[in-house]
Image (cartoon, rainbow over all chains, first blue to last red; front, side, top):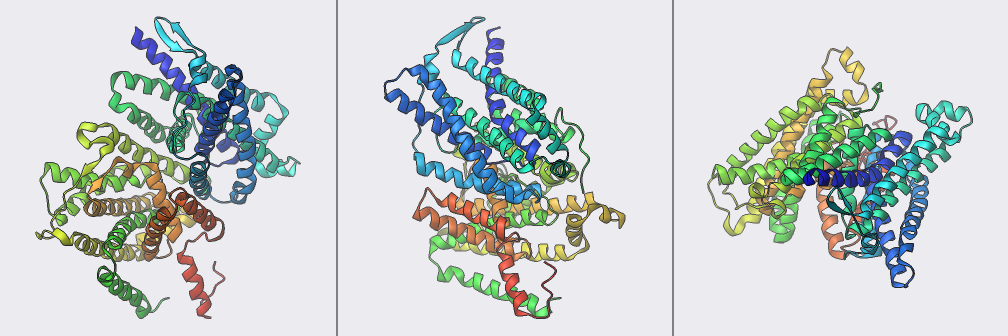
Amino acid sequence: MDTLTIILLDGITFASWLFLISAGLTFAYGVLRILNIAHGSIYAIGAYTGATFARALLHSGADPFLAYPVLLGAALLVGLVLGPLLERGFLRRVYDQEEVITLLLTFSIFLILEDAMKLIWGVSPIIVAEPYALLGQLTVAGVTYPVYSFLLTGVAIAAGLGLWVVVDRTRFGKLITAVINDREISAALGVNVPSIYTVAFTGAAILAALGGALTAPMVSVVPGISADVIVLAFAVTVIGGLGNVAGGAIGALLVGLLRSAAIQFLPALELFVVYALMTVILLFRPEGLFGGVEVRRI
Amino acid sequence: MRRALGGAAPWLSALLVSASLPRLLPDWLGFLLTVALAKALVVLGVAVLLRSNLVSFGHGLYFATGAYAVAFAARWLHLREAVLLILVTLLVSGALAAVLGLFLARYRGIFFGMLTLAFSMILYSLLLKLYSLTGGTDGMVIAPPTILGLSPGAQATRAYYYLTLVCLALALIGTRRWLGSPVGFLANAIRDNEIRVEYMGASVRRGIYRTYLLSGLLGGLGGCLVAFTVGHIAPEFSYWTQSGDFVFVTVLGGYASVFAPVVGSVVFELVRNYAYALSPYTWQMSLGVILLFIILFLPRGLWSLLETFRVVSSPWTSSSKR
């Protein structure tokens, strides 16, 4: 019974984290048709910035509970700076090119940011665990579990709902939908497509940075986390269907539960199950579990 | 439209230069060059796929398969002979490509990339976590194999350099012949317009399947030769950043000629080595900047610089086809 509770709790926590890192990726793909490898770098920069700010705050002797808004602020800052910079500076130049070219372009940005982080923050790990420990623990069905995990889940749900409200319930969301369906006609009808692209990409960047900033207190922030994160995010994105945010949520939940079950029963297959699921989905439903069938353009 | 002499001259000069290199260069540079040439085989594999506009973002799969095939053949079959080990590698990576190719031949664009990525990450997760079998992150050590029964001993660097050179030369000749064959031309046609290829009566799927098979064989051979030379292999061979490096080098060199991947690979290893020595924290950044530059300004790779030069030098070649 306890094992089941642990699997559920771990799985949901892991799924929340996965959703935060992959929602932006799949959203950006849906709007811009760009699979952004540098998404992982934005995540890592969010983690570094969040950790740095939170550490500065704790050293200054201020109320430690201020660390949470500081983490959020760090994520916003990173997203608002990096999003427009990358989209306007680089991605804009390759929209009319093939998907593989844009993939390579984001790979080059990934390589550049990877070293930029080493230059700014060095290579020794940064550990700021206070915000994690501060909220204490909670006993759920006989299992003691850190409250911070529930906070993470709450934020992931809020982010998902927020994204849904924006896309489905606002004028801006309707414009996005129009642009996704037909970029040229939208432009001809007076929609400012470039600015929609910038805003959508910046939103994705903020989500990535948020995922990073909230992860920072749970792990030690070291070089190389961006590479590990992005390939997991790819798996989740593919499982849910490229460009499908709701599918991404289900994909995250599926991967999260599967992995935490594997950790309990077959720890050696912990990573294998994730990529095996990704492969199976690609083989039998390449459009993702919930993606619609897309007519192939030749 | 190249004349026969023009076709043979670069081959002969390249062969002469590369054969005499070990006498001219210090040992460490010879080692670096061997690794670069071995990896050039993998890059060649990525390049033949790229001609059909298929980006394999998981060619580390074959790189690692080749390397681990050597390790397990040495452990389980007690093979110590390089030629036999190469044959085993080709058999294993060929079989793997023959199976995976069945699935991959149906995929294009981003989905092809994602599926190859998924396959390579599966192998990575297995190599990483099946500790008792593969040694996990510690990797595996490979004892230097004999070449045709001769133990290389102190001359190992040089011996494996020549072995790699011979394999590379054979692979280049084979690939070049293959590209000149109808199936090879089909690869370009598939890139331009799949529907027309089908209308002409050729099978796109079969064309892609064969291309993939070739590219898997080349990848496995490259991994096997790196395993000989370095003597130590690790799960990172199959990690996506390794595959990304291969794609990077392919784009760096371009794929206009079979030599382009070799040039790209050698330039890459040298740049990486020197950049790493000069400033360990910015070498990836310099690679990234180079890649960015190539994508934005030189979409056909370093090799196209040479082509541009050629076009300029001969007034008879039309430059308008670009």
